[in-house]
Image 1 (tube, rainbow, N blue to C red):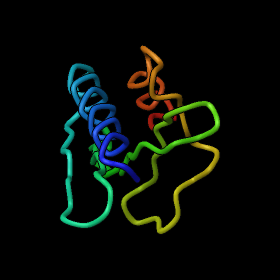
Image 2 (cartoon, one colour; image 1 turned 180 degrees about the vertical axis):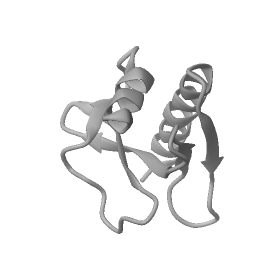
Image 3 (tube, one colour; image 1 turned 30 degrees about the horizontal axis):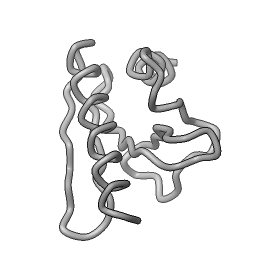
Length: 95
């Protein structure tokens, strides 16, 4: 992945972090030395969820999984450019 793509990934996660924080969720952006950045979110039930942003055929998309899951769920994603991406993720995690 190019430096430009890494910067785009970081920008999307940062924007999502502020949006989720605005909705009242606790979030932390984890930037490891190796690997991709991950957004950690605490749900209302106290469950930790990992959110990442990936490139898909439609552009950038957020995907999430519980902290204990080893694989990312292919059916849980939302387009990163959506104005209401944080609200969609929060609603999915409440269900």
